Amino acid sequence: MRFFFLLAFSLMISSYGMGQNAEYTAENPGWLVDVDEAYAESQKTGKPILANFTGSDWCGWCKRLTKSVFVHKEFKDWAEKNVVLLELDFPRRKSLPARFKQQNQNLQQAFKVRGYPTVWLFDLSKESTDSQYSISALGKTGYTKTASEFITNINEMIARRDTGE
Image 1: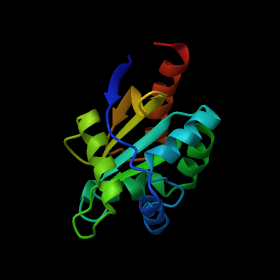
Image 2: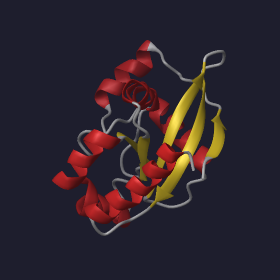
Image 3: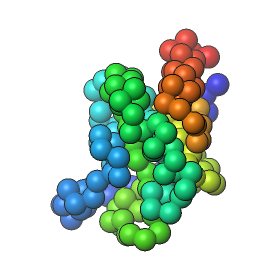
Image 4: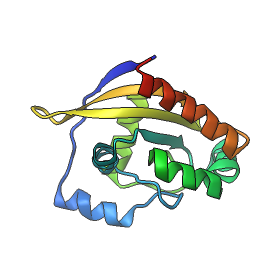
């Protein structure tokens, strides 16, 4: 089942914002933090975006998800072939650059995320006239005990996408 959202937020791409991007990276290696970069990679590869809404420095279940799934070779190998990884962090002990804090809050509102971890799989398209994204949500999950179980859940969402269900 697909849900369509219109995400109305400015891209806020400036030389100041781009400089901040070089300083700010995801907690998990290989994950992007910029929705624009994730969109570009998704368009280039045809892969959906897998977004992890996390509280990296305070959320116990988020840390457990990383340890049980995201750090394992099985997940990393699978992800490289199947999805574009996007980390959307909501830390308490560190501050994000303003551009990413706003981006993450906008996506949190668009997906109605109320708890962490929440992981959404989705496709993006972009309106050329106003630089807004249209989101086709494919499904969501949360904490999962194993990489195999997590991959199975996401593969089911991808299969529904590919069959047009």
